[in-house]
Amino acid sequence: MTTQVAPLSHEESSLRYPGWKVAAAAFVGVGTSFSPIVPYTFSLFLNPLHTEFGWQREAISGTFALAAITVALVSPGIGVLFDRFAPRRIILPSILIFAMALASLSLLGPSIKRFYLTFFILGLVANGTAQFAYTRTILTWFSKRRGIALAIILTGSGVGSILIPPATQWVIDHHGWRNAYLLLGGIALCGLPLTALLVRNRPLPATREDESAIAGVTVAVALRRAPFWIMAFIIMLSAFNENGLVTNMAAMLTEHGISPQSAALALSVRGGAGIIGRLCTGFLIDRFSAQRIQTFILMLSAAGTLILAFSGTSALALLGAALLGIGLGSEADIIPYLLANYFGRKHFSVLYGLTWTAYAIGGATGPIVVGHLYDRWGSYQPRFIVGLACVALLATLISLLLRSERADDRVILQELIPADISTEE
Image (tube, rainbow, N blue to C red):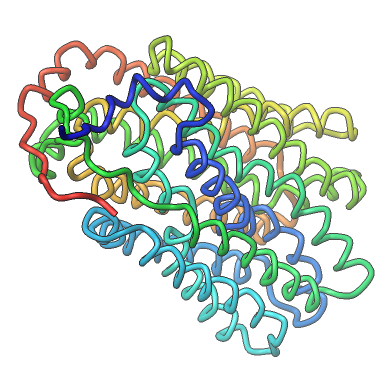
């Protein structure tokens, strides 16, 4: 008698379900990936690099923009790889390259070209190490608990953003910025063992009940639908706001009279609040409208941005960072959840890669615009921080369009194409 794989929804409530081990390994991998390391420590090196080499802030911020643009260009191609090959074949070499590139920054000289080249390499492998790399695998293991499973792996980035910035600042203060880059290179290797042992796609189920979960529309069909472009635009605006603030937050707060230690703590608080926001979001989207939840968290991000614009005390800085953390970043839970619901999983990684292109465009322009405005005005003027809050409000309004489109576009799922019968590794 042939034993069939039980439907996903019948197993996921048990802690013995093997998918939770995969989620735990992904949590560690994401917690030591590009996502928490590069954006959350970038601003800590602005003053040391300016002091050491005399580089302007706009020029330094340009390296982050280059990495983000590179992510934008390569994400769809990486998505194709994750749709076709076992995840470890992509993730493991990406982690190795990422760690070596970070450690090599300890050898920087006065030529900024080397700095740019290294961040270009970081951009090439970024999504091979971050949540993008693990999300499709998690989708193969979860259906009814998909929201909370996605939230768990994404909180890895939040945990990393709590622990990594203070450790990096301590090393900068006591051992110099070069040793801090060596530390980051070592941290980047921490996700390698568990990923090698545990991260793999779930074998395709033998029951008809779950076959629709592994089907999906073609990429061309998805690109003809309004919900995809609405999601992409929301991500682009959110990334512009988030990266524009996070990559300059430490320098901005110290200019307002906040100590460097408190500024680093604000970055950690932002990450810690992101953990709470993502876990709550993951819990809620398994039960309520994902569109309404997304609108609410974007409103929180706008409020946090406004508070940071006028934060003159550590308490206000921490409050603004907390609201920003809850609001921005939680869309990383909601967008893959909505993509899988609207378009299926057959070509999920390609579509997710295209939304990362939108994210990278926003993420690239945010830091460089803020850096340019600083170099022009000589300070972090509250008025352009208020402008970032307006961007967050615009994303909130656009999310309302997605909610209104939902009923009509659910018919997309009627156009699902059959899934392959082959077993996923």
